[in-house]
Length: 150
Image (cartoon, rainbow, N blue to C red; front, side):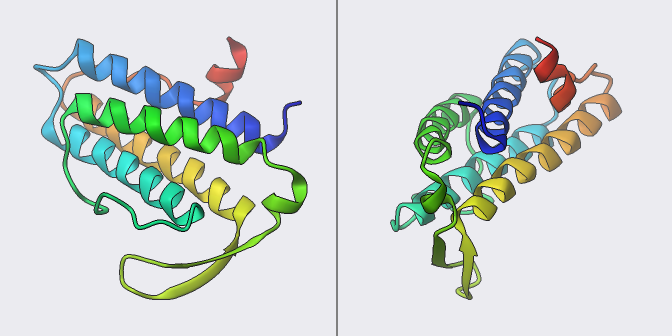
């Protein structure tokens, strides 16, 4: 069964994998800011996954990684989110209490957190595309509609 959260998880996984492959192909030409932004996406995904699991995240928000480490973090986060998006409706509505990176306390629904994670990745992938174009590289199209067309 495909729900909107499942679709967004599938899209996020696809878009991150597409970007990883592009960055591998253009490794010598890719501006460092692109890897910094992609590291940030991976960090945020891990941080949120660990929060949902009630665990302390192993990374900081702006830690920088190699592309190989980003790829490993993507695989870890994506498999963890796969379990989350297939949760039943009662779990999606569950309120999660967490502390953000500024040590502030918040509560949000499980589903809203997942929507945030996937939307956050889209935002920063667009920044990466802009940086690639600004530096003479043709960015890949990671629009959602491109994903559903395949």
